[in-house]
Every structure is written in structure tokens, then in C-alpha cells.
Image (cartoon, rainbow, N blue to C red; front, side, top):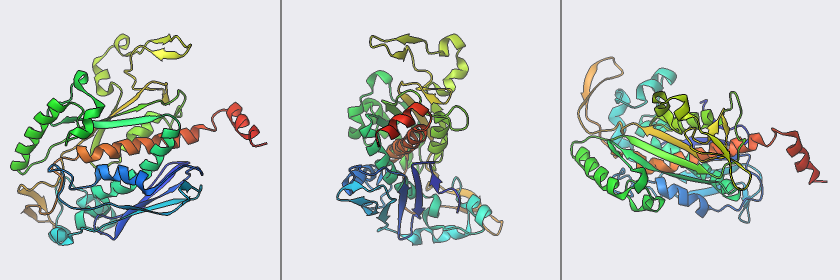
Length: 369
């Protein structure tokens, strides 16, 4: 199937299904000499694995990663890196009825329309477990960014109507909150709200915010390879994301030019700076040296246990009640997915940008003489 490969220079290809033998990713274009271990990748996968709180699916998976190729003596070799996570807790019988009908809010119908055939076990390729490959690859990208002094911080900004207050947000609170919210008071309100919706056999949507710091000015292309376009497109490729904002986002529609423009000034060290950051760190598709700020809107989990109306493959109107193990809210486990998709996008853009100036190419190759 097309659409499983991401990137121009730092390329990743994810593979696997929710109820297959396993899932994984092949990463090509990683430089040699990067210190990398399974523990480095596992730390990221542990943040997305199921069964960690009462707000995630009770499916129990260790999600233990294996590095199959591309490293030697703890460092990358420059050859393709293959990573695999085995599925150990499949209950495909929970999905046997789904073969004959289309679940509302899922990709069941569109997969059938495209391929005339689908893996109905937990959504197959369109399952949230597909993000295992993204996160594993993104862990490698994050290691590269660490070497460049670039950091990425993501967290749940909103759940339902409950939005974290800017003045009360502390990154240290993210892992203290079962919803990964940096405002603990709002997290408690959101937890109570979510518990009520779970009793009603319903689910909740929300927003994940991601801040990238330390990106130098000049990354991204001015036309089709715009950095904001790549970030938006790659983050929207996460299954449950229905909208992305960069910087002030949709709020710019209510602003005037004098309000929205970020005035420039020279700082004490002779660097160009902005007085505000409504642009979200990107101007004309190219990074401006300020923090890159992205927000992703996630829809409510479509697998709810209420009775719903749909159609079957015979074209009949029917009512269904979904079974199985499902997340009542996606954002807490999706935080690391947004973070790693941003990392993958940024590393590829950094690598592509290495050829944008002749003086830098000349400097690079002169060091090899």
C-alpha cells in the first residue's frame, strides 16, 4: 500500500497491524555514530503504551522494542535501522462482528471503498497501534535533535471544555497528571469531567500543544517544502487529528495586521529577535529562530459503547454496540506521538536544508581533505 513512507533524506517506513504478529519501522538516512540503545527508544514507547491509567484502554501490552539492524556496539552504523515491537495481547474475537458492518467514526467504510478488503481486527493498519512505528522512529530523531541542542515539549492543553491556563502551566506537572496536563488544577477538573463521560459510555476530544525550542533560523523551504506545511501535514497524518494550528492559529482571523505582526529587534548579543511570537516560530515557511508552537485537535475516540446507527456490507441499516478495549480519551497517550512526529519532520527538514547554501557545502567538504 502507498503512504507508509515519510521523509526525503531521513526516511521512515512503518509497518504492521493492530492484531498482527507485531509492528515496527525501518529508518533510513540516520547518520553513523549516534549513540542509540533499545532503552533510548523504550523510554518513548512507554509513554504511549496502553493500560497505564484508568483513562486508557485496558489492553495490556509491554510494547518492548527490539533493534534488528543498523547499530553496532551501541552506535548507529549509517545503514537502515529496523525496529520491531511484538503484539502479545490480541483478542481478535472482540472484533469478529465488525467484519460485516462499518463502525461510525472509523476507517472501516473508507478502507473497503479503497481496497475492497480490510483487516477488521482492531482497525488493522488504521489502528492507533500503528503509531508505535512513528514513536520508535521519532525516538531516534529526538536523539539527533539532542545533539543539536533542540528540545521538544508536548502536553495535553485541553480536554473537552477544560483548557490549561498559561500562567499555571508547569512542564514538571505533565508526568504528574494522568492526563498529561501541565496545569494540575485543570487536570483534576478534566478528570472529573472525563469520569462522568465514561459512565455515560462516551468519549472526549481535546488538544495537544507542542513547543520546539532551539531551532535555528533558516530551516524549511519557501514554496512546497514549507516547514509549517510539513509539520501540519505530518501531524494531521496521526489518525485522530482533525486540525492543526501554528502559532496564533485560527485566532489570526480576528486580528488586524498591526496586532498580528511580530516586531523585530536586535538583542544585546546582536541577534535578530521578535517581540511577540504570533507566527509560531515560522515565517514564509522557514524557521525564524523563535519557539515553534503547534497545536493538534484530536477528535473523541470513535469506539464508544453506546448504541449507534450504521450500515452493513449488505447495504442494510442496523444498530450496533461496540465491544472490545478502547481509550475513552486519546490525548494523554498521543502527546508522545505529536512530539515524535514533530521530531521526524524537523530532522528531515534539517537534513534537506544542509544543501541550501554553497558556502556550507564547501565548508563541509573542505574538512574532509
